[in-house]
Length: 422
Ligand SMILES: [Cu+2]
Image (cartoon, rainbow, N blue to C red; front, side):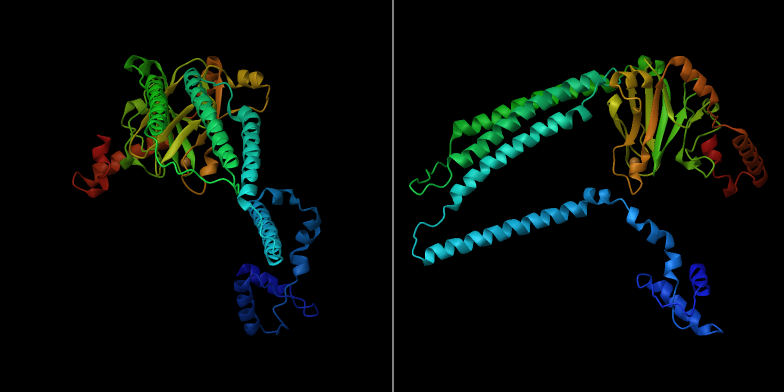
C-alpha cells in the first residue's frame, strides 16, 4: 500500500501512461486511489523510467553466463536435439518410402544401423566413465583427515574397483552383442530360452561377492562405532543438535560431562532444553563453531530438535543421522589440523566442513558449518573464550522461577517445570 501511494504521488500527468501489467494487485490499488483522489489523475501512470532507472542502466551489464548453467537451458537443449533427431528420422522415412515407390525392394536395414549406433554409445559411455574417474575422482577421493577414515577408504576403494570392473565388462558385452547380432537379412535368430548352468553362475557369483562386501563393511562399521566404555569416557565430549536450519553446539566443559536435557524444558531462552538444576550443565559452553583438538578422540552426541538431519563431515569420513528424540553418537580422532591439511592439499582455502546430509527443508543447504581442527593449546585458548550456557540471565530466570513456584503453591499448574527440574 505504501509503495502504491508513493507511486501515485510521483505521477506526472503529462507523462505517457504506462501500466505495470505484471503487478495487477498494485494496479487495482492505484485505481481505487485515483477514484477517491481530489485531483483526478489521467491514468494509473507510474514513472517507470524513474522507478526502474537502476535496472535500465544496469541491464547491459547483466552477466548471462549463469544462463548456460541453468536446468532450463539444458532442458531446452535436450528438446532441440530431440526435435533435430525426429526431423532426420522423418527425412529418412520419406527417403525409404520414395525408394519403395520406385520399386526398389531393398528397404533400408534399420537394425543394422542401430547395431552400429550401439558401438558409438559404448565408446562414448566408456569415455564418459574415464572422464568421470579422472576429473571427479580427484575431487572426491582425498586423504582422510581422521584415523578411522583409512578403513572406510579401504573398503570404499575395494568396492569401487570390483564394481568398476563388472560395470565395464558387462557394458562391453551388452553393447558388443547388440553390435555382433545386428540385423542381417540372411541371418536368423536362434531360439535359446534357458541354461541352468549359466543362471547358476550369474546368481551365485554376485551373491558371494556382495555377501563378502557386506560382511566386510559390517565389521568395519562395527569396529568404528563400537567404542569401549573406557574409551568413551576418555574422549572429549561435544553435543551437536540440528534444527531447521542450523547446528547448535555444546561443549561439555571442565567436567567433560554434558548436563542433562529434557524437551519439556525447551523455551525461547533455553533452546536445547538444558536442565540447569543439573550441576553438570553449569560449565557447558556454547560453541559458535566446531573446534576440535588434533590427535584427540572426540565423542559427538548428535540430536535433532525437529526433523531428521545428518551430521556429515566428509573429509573426516564422519556421518551419523540426527534423530529427534534419540541421541546418536560418533567417536573419531582427527589426525591433521586444518593448517596441516591446507599444506598437504596445497590449498590455502581448504576447511573441514560440517554438512547436513538429509534433505531437511528449504534451508537445508544453509546448514554448513566450518570445523576447525587445531592444536591442543589453540583449542584450550579458544574454549576458554566461549560463553557458558549457564549465564547470568539464566541464573536470574531460574531464581524468578523458584520464587514463582513457591508463591503459586504446590498445586498450581504454573509450576509445570517443577517435576522435570527435580
Ligand atoms: Cu538438515
